[in-house]
Structure formats: structure tokens, C-alpha cells
Image 1 (tube, rainbow, N blue to C red):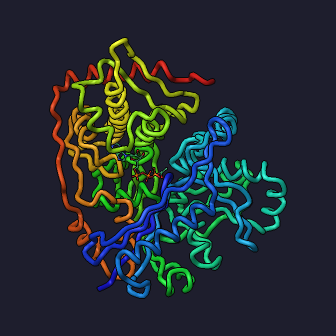
Image 2 (cartoon, rainbow, N blue to C red):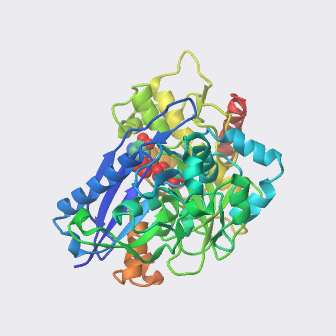
Length: 495
Ligand SMILES: Nc1ncnc2c1ncn2[C@@H]1O[C@H](COP(=O)(O)OP(=O)(O)O)[C@@H](O)[C@H]1O
Ligand SMILES: O=P(O)(O)OC[C@H](O)CO
């Protein structure tokens, strides 16, 4: 029986999941790795931690599945996007820590570029905004601040990659330097219409083209792992950014279908098929993962802090012993007691794009308890996602009929109920919550013939539960009005 191994390199942990020929998870392994916060607004990962934790989980997942690498038909790779790694081609060693997508150190650089009038051109070509979220300015920062980096880059000695490229480089012993369109589309250096690295954007950011990986399809026989890593060589046949992989794993293949992934952040993607829809409401246009060689596009809303606020309740405040304990605590009160929690710890992403916003707890009174704060934190995740959906509805021609939910925090029933209440559309949770890994596995399995054609893939998606809206539209509107007023109070705080 052929298996597929999905490697899911996320912001806080690396995961590996073995899927069978029916798209069902057989065994998995997960490892957290250290986060580094060297200065306020900075977030870094050690690239070797990413690689080693990913390799360790791959080996562990195979062991737990009781299979050998030669029983794998392929590997699918999916990853935290935008996070920027720079390494030496000869030694394979990173020149510095990776700059993580949440890192804001390039906010001023982005503002200078926007003030100089480049935003419209950048937006038209990349579908993105000039924001520190994306890779290009992070790479420019590394070239300008790591001693000797720029000279080495100009001599062709260095390689840049998002995390997919970095993992594939290591998996192939430095033989392959590749990425896929869904990752390239997050760099501010890739033209999503021509599907090529864009010389003018590279010049704007002062990035030598020699640093860049080759862009290959998300589903295809692209590389082979070094035999000694997993026990035998395995084909790498799927590559996609984690949010686009989740869209694929949620079987949102038809234009108009959308998903929201509740992980560290929240990422809502609407499939727009072969149309690159440009947002007028603060959303991004991005390349979706495509199962064939035709480009597919998506509209995306990115919220920087989602489940991470629950981690903060756990690690920062010590309010709960683990993330799942937040649900009973929040459910022990009927509402948030007037408390609003805007978790803008790393600024605000879509649709506000405010790198200077800060986190805020508003509406506190003498009667506020831990439970109210826990509830307000969950509601804060749902309010931010409601802002995204509103922007999406305004951009798209058809109203959304349901939202598919996944990611670690989608296990929280209270959160999803609150989400349905605020949105006024059903929120649907699939049986396999690991849709990111599933998406990567499906892309790989499709390329090697383990999984059927695109039409057959939708059959792998199975529903677990539907959350129907249970409050009036008037009440939802009133609550969202209050939320927006809370957001206004934390905006531009650190400017
Ligand atoms: N039951 C829960 N309720 C709320 N949040 C949760 C729950 N379980 C996990 N989380 C949050 O979900 C996030 C983990 O989700 P995951 O999809 O693994 O994230 P990532 O891929 O970004 O690392 C963490 O931030 C965690 O706090
Ligand atoms: O690590 P995740 O799952 O929160 O995803 C991070 C995103 O890819 C950032 O754009």
C-alpha cells in the first residue's frame, strides 16, 4: 500500500504526518522549536532548528506508522511562508537566523518604498502590499546587516529561500534549490501574472537574482531526498505554502470556496480560480497551490495573531495550563462581560495593515475575571476573522455560503460557534483538522498517481461538524461595531 509523507514546517512546530492512499492520517510526530525575540518587534528562528526538528519528526512519523521510507510514494512539503533564510551554497550553513514572517524590523524600509510611490506597481505585479510581513525586504535587511553578506551574494556564493527551499536544499544534500509559486508569491519579488521573478522588483529591493531558487510547480516530480536521511531516497512531489496547502486540503477547488486556518495566525483564503482578483478592501491576491500547470489564484486575509493569543494566556499570563483549557474557562461565563481583547502583539495585518498597532484589553471593570479575559481572547480571534470575511465579501461578486475551518485552534467549539455568530454563515469543520499537511500530501500524491485526478480529491474531504449562526444579525452588528471601536483605540499606538 503506497503512503505519502507530509512535512509541515509551521511557525511554532515542525510536524510530519504519514497519509494512506485514502488521504487518511496513519501516524504523526510533532516537535516545537525555540522562538527568538532579540528586540521588540523582531522574531527569529534558527534555520538549523527548523531543519533538524523537521527531519526528526519525519523519522519519528515513519517509525510510528511502522513503515520504511521505501514504502513512501512521495513526500509533500508545506511550510510557514515568508520566513527568510539566507545560506552559503558551498557550506550549506545559514548566515544568520531566519527572519520570521511576524518580524517587523523592515517596517520603515517598506514605508520608505511606499512613500516613494512604488506601492501601486508592487501591488499590481505581486498582489501584495509594501509590508514587513513579506520576504523581499527581510532578505535585503540580511544582505545589508550581516557582515560580508552582500559581497558574497554578488559573487553568487549565497542562496535565499523560504522555508520550503531551505528544507528541500537540506533534504537533497544541496542538489536542488527550488520553490513553488505559492511560496514565491509571498516574497514581493515574484510577478504572479507572468509567474517569474521580476527584475524591476529585484532592482527596487536591491536583491541579486543569483540568490533566488528556481520556481517549479506545486505538484510534480521535482527532487529526490538523500538516501541516508530517511533510509532510502524518496521523491519530493508536493510543495506549497501552508495556507495554500490548507485551501487545497479543504478541497476549496471551485471559485467562491473559502477556508480559514486558525493556527498561530489566522489566514482566510478564497479560491478565485484562474482569475487574479485584486482587492479594494485591504486583502492580498496570491497564487493558490495548483494541482496542474495552470495558475490558480486566491484572495487572502492574513491575521497575525490567532491561536498565539491563547499561547500568550498560557505562557505569558499563566492563565491556563494548556491551550485546550481555554475553552472551559471561557465557557464558564455567558459573555466577555464587556471586555474586548485586540491581540495586535505584532501590529495588525489585513485589512488594517498597521505595523504600529499594539495589543489592547479594553472594557475592564472591577468585576472582570480570568474567564472574561479568556472569552474576550477567543472572541478577538473571531472578530479579526469576521473583519477579513467582510472585506472578502466586499471584493467578491458572490456571497459566501460557508466557511471551512481548520488549524489547531479550530478544535475549539466555542471559538467556531462565536465565529459563525459573528459572520452569519455556517462554519464547517472537517474530520481531518490537519488540512495543511493533507493538502501537501494530496499535491504530492496527485503527482505520483497515488491519488486520483482533481475531481476525485474532493471525496477525501469529510465533514465533522457545522456551526450555525445562533445570534441575530442586529446583535452581531452591534458587537462588531464595539470591536471596531476597540481596534481604533490600539491603532498607530507605537508610531
Ligand atoms: N483548543 C484550543 N483552543 C484555542 N486555541 C488552541 C487550541 N488548541 C491549540 N490552540 C492554538 O492553536 C495554535 C496551534 O495551532 P497550529 O495549527 O498547530 O499552529 P501553527 O501551524 O501555526 O504552529 C497555538 O497557537 C495554540 O495556542
Ligand atoms: O505557521 P502558521 O501555520 O501559523 O502559518 C504561517 C503563515 O504561513 C504565515 O504567512
